[in-house]
Amino acid sequence: MFRQIKQHRLYFALVWLTLAVGIILHLLFTKTTCFVWLNAFHTPSLDFFFALFTFLGDGIFALSVIPLLFLFADRKKAISLLFAFLTSACLAQVLKRIFQQPRPKLYFEETAFQYLHYVNHITLHSSYSFPSGHTTSAFALATILVLSFKKMRLAVPCFLFAVLVGYSRIYLAQHFLLDVLVGAAIGTLCGLWGYYVVVDLQAFGSFKKKTVTKPATLWT
Image (cartoon, helix red, strand yellow):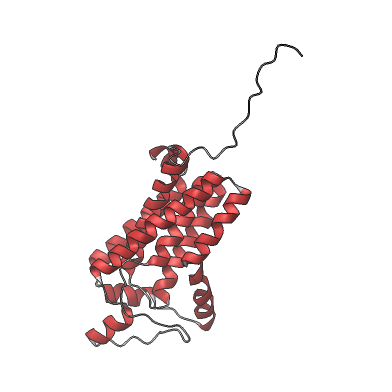
């Protein structure tokens, strides 16, 4: 696992740096202050963009990538994504039900805080805010893609994809900063673990076609 981190140091450095900055902000300021600061700039174009882009963190999108990996990469990569998605999704759902944290809309109603930048036509949920499931899926997917294709030029696009999905959850008033940070950490770690178990340890077999050795004959 540490070998994979070393080989893809740029991607993981960006992830760890983002998490560190986010944690510092969360420790220095209240969750409401962080939320408002991250939502200081809204435009109709951004509303439209993030309302669409957030669906890339949906579990259905992550699952739809699995057959593409199966066809254009190999079976181990596809199985590693499935393993990472299932483990990260289960962990996120368990934490949601343990902590049962209110989402921004309900939290602001309870604290009598007036927030004015809700995006039109977005259905706002009230409960199970911690952690962000969309962010978890996005970072699990991004991590598996970076590890699978082993190309340095994919590091930044995959990182930006996951970060934008995470930010979309704050922009659309579905989650707080801490929800997104923990979701990113879970997705990244489960992506690493899934790739390590399936590809490096080959826990599910080699997924390679067996070659049949013809029996030796006494004549040619």
